[in-house]
Length: 95
Image (tube, rainbow, N blue to C red; front, side, top):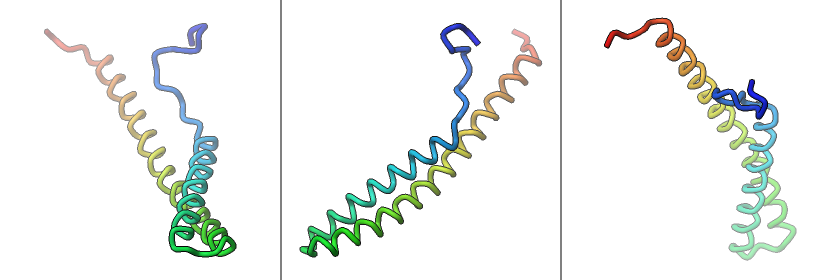
């Protein structure tokens, strides 16, 4: 690794931190969406709050699920790229 922390390779994914961030993001999106739709439907504040909490839970779970699929796909892509680079460097091409 170079002194500046860059070695020309793709960075390693930090799955635990990424999953936590995606879950929190999904919960915030769900909360705002749930409260927004409840208030647009002229629900009182307590009902809007409970609907927001329920949608925050669902949003957090959905974004965590989607994020795990996305991270797994990204890791497969990085592994395939590394294998392709190894194969191309081991087998020189004739020009």
